[in-house]
Image (cartoon, rainbow, N blue to C red; front, top):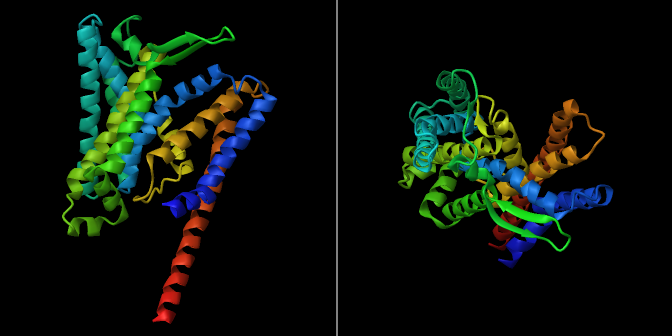
Length: 349
């Protein structure tokens, strides 16, 4: 156990933590607003959607797949929830029905993805990319091509904006933790428990490590793969509901581009896109780094709005490349070490 902790502290994780510390210290010195409690809470609130989606997509990636439809699924969930809740005048009961319908729709989409990918052997990126266009068309039909607003003060408003913790600091500034942060933390803990402590989690890792071997030992690859994609789509629905709540409306463009940011967060977090390797802590770290970079780009005044996304993407891309290079070197180093141990054992014999 001690050796495992030491190896993690001296490997790729050391690089990630070091990068995070350097960025935080540099920004704390150059921009006083960065390390304020209010800004830290803003970062955590900002990454709540990315974090939820990253934790959900991790299940699909661990089995060797991809889910490029999460942005559109997020938009669909908000649209369904608003349209259903509008039938009952956005009463609490109808809002709950709308939220339930949205999540069920996402889960069904995930199971449909699993069926096409496993049973018909269609590559996951083809299936999820194609369905993302289908979902976009479905949103347009449901909404009539316009955004769907909800009534402020209804239950929809509390999904993201309800204040769970609120008090005044000694400096006189308010400290607020909203519902979206609580949902993110609870969801991340549940995903960690499922992957780390349950039989289902071990099966997910086994399928991603070697699908054929998993079948030989009696694991139902189809059922577990469908469940993994259902979790990914379900997480996208939760993220979409938070987005809808924070913006006060649902539209086709809600969640657009989130799949790319979530994928980059997973790569930065050390998740192997080939499957079989990755942790919830890595997914959260990646989402946190993405959020910090976005926050820095917002705080820096010399960046024009049109260049903001460019610099944000460029910085994340550089970190992704460095992370992948270090991960590859780490794997090669472990392989050479294992080979040396095997050779020493053969000589002893």
